[in-house]
Length: 119
Length: 386
Image 1: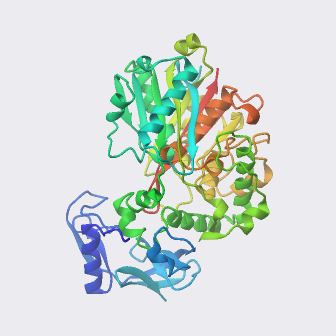
Image 2: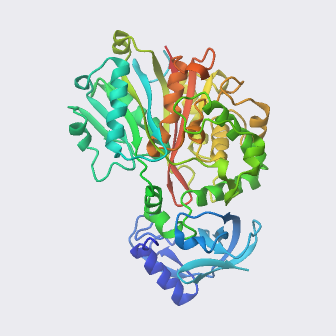
Image 3: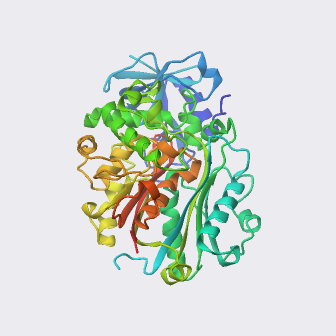
C-alpha cells in the first residue's frame, strides 16, 4: 500500500515531470529545501516556487534493502537506495541500480513517480 | 547537592508488560504500569496529581482521556511524545513542575501497544516528510535513514560491523540478567556477523524488535520519598535539544555534543565520575555518537573505546545494563524510557542480578522522533542515588 503524497510533494513531482528536475525554492530568501513544504523553513515565507534544477548530485551512501514492510516491494528486493546531495545542496533519497561508492557523481530523474539516480 | 532541581527526586522505576504483540490498547498499559508503580510506592491514585504520558498508539483516545480512565484528578498533565527522547524530556518537565509546586507526585509513563501488523501503519504515516520522501523508497521504515547514517558514520570513522557487534553482544549479555527482557538469549560476535542482512549495512542483530510494553517512574520531593520509604535518586542535570546541527548534511553527531559541557557542569560531574550509562540504542552508530558526544571519548573514537572497554554490567563501562532495546525490545515511547528507568534502578541499587557494584551516579541519554533523515530530539540526564 502506497501512502499518498502530500499536496506539496505532488506539486513538486509534477514540476519535476515537466522540467527534468526541479527543487522547492523560496522566492523571498532565495534558498532551496527538501522535502517540500508550502513555506520556507529558513524565512517562513509562503512564497515557494519550483525552480528547474540540473539534478546533478553526488552519492553520500548507498543502502541495500533486503526486507520491506510493504508486500508491493517484495518482488523488487533486494533493491538499492542511495542518499545523495544535489549540487544545489539538498539531501535526497532515490533508487539506484547498484551500490555506488561515496562521491560518485550522478543525475537525479523521475521514473514512475519515484526519484532514481543514474550515472 | 549539586544540580538545579533542588529536592526533587525520582523513585519507583517500573517496567511492565513486555510482549511481542499486544491484544490490549495503549491505555491498558498506562493503567497497569501505574498500578505497579503505586503498589511499589504505597501510594494510591488519589495521591497522584501529575501525569506525563508518552505514547504513539494512544489514539483515538487523547491524552486528556487518561485522567478519567486512570481515575486521577490532576493539577498537571502533559503529553511528551518524543519517542526515544521521551523519558529525559518527561523527567525534565515533571521535575520542574514539582520544584515549582504545580504538582506533588507526577507519574511519568511511556507506554505503547503493538498489535500485529500495526508497526507498518505507524512508520508509514509517522511524518509527512517521511511519507513523501523516505517511505516510497522501499517501505523500510526508520531502517532506511538510519542505515544511511550508519554507512556514512562507518565511512567517516572507520567503524566496522565488528565494532558494532561488540556493543550488541554486550547488551544481549546484559539482557540475559533482566527478567522482563524479551531477548534474553546471549549472542556471540559470530552470531552477529552471520545474521541475515535487512538494510545493509544493517543485519538482523543491529535492529530492535518492535513490541508492546510500558516503563515509568515517579517524580516527587525528597522528604515525601523518605516518608514512603522509597529508594530515590536526585536529578542533578538534564539537557534537551531539538534539531541540533541542521546544517550537517551527514549526521555524524547529535545534540549531546552541543550540550554535554553544560550537562556535566550543572551536575558537578565529569564523564569519569559516571558509574553507569544508558544510551538510546535503536542503531549502534547512534550509540557510538552518544558515547562520543557525551565525552566518554573523542569524536570518531567510539570504535576504539568499545574495543578497549567492557560494556557488560560487570565490566569497566557498564552500559545499557538491562539490555536496552536490543535486549528488551522497542515498545514505542516506552523504548525511550528504558535508559532512565534502568539508570534509576542502578543508582538506587534495585537492579538485582545485574546490579553495578557501587553505582551512585548514572547518565541516561535519549534520542527520538525520526523526521526524514535523522531524529530531531536529543537529551541526557544525570541522576545520583541518595
